[in-house]
Image 1 (cartoon, rainbow, N blue to C red):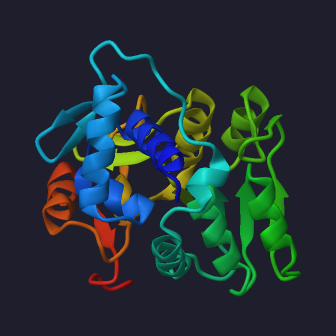
Image 2: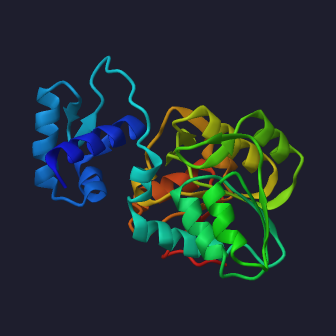
Length: 261
């Protein structure tokens, strides 16, 4: 990866999560921590961020940068997303109905669910709907609304209104960040609104978050931690963070070290 590309990704990640450790940057970029340290020094000198002990934060008074584009996010943490998808798919039983919001992790879940017995899946994601529609045993419903091209999904008042007329067994959403103090958060208001509406109309509320999202917070709250019935994460999740989520009221933690039943 070229230096300019690394710098752009570092700034995108930092704007989304507001504070990240050197280790998180190294994992996300697939480079050494020493390379990240050099990059952070250069970006601090140019005024793009401020280094703190063990990581970096946005510069004081720095302007807001948008969340990274979907195509960039989709290429990060692919093994972890597949691991989460496999675990989450085991929650949904044949004949049950579920909501999926739009994102790269929920797309991985849709691809995993496509090989399972017949389900009723309602989603605002065009990609997830298409992945599930290839399995004739499923009933797939695509929510209406305003079409956004970045994530290829529908948003807006119509989307939320359609969600409000339904009641499902599961809502499975993938936020930008999840921490004990702020719960599930997102960067964009339309995404947070759809995820919040889905969670409100489900008997079981599930958050999908790989280890890079844990302990991180973005701008808009989707729900507090205590409203989450199941947090599904991957094997790299920090044990201390998982303990803090349980203390904050998350009913169940599901990962490689936690049994599905």
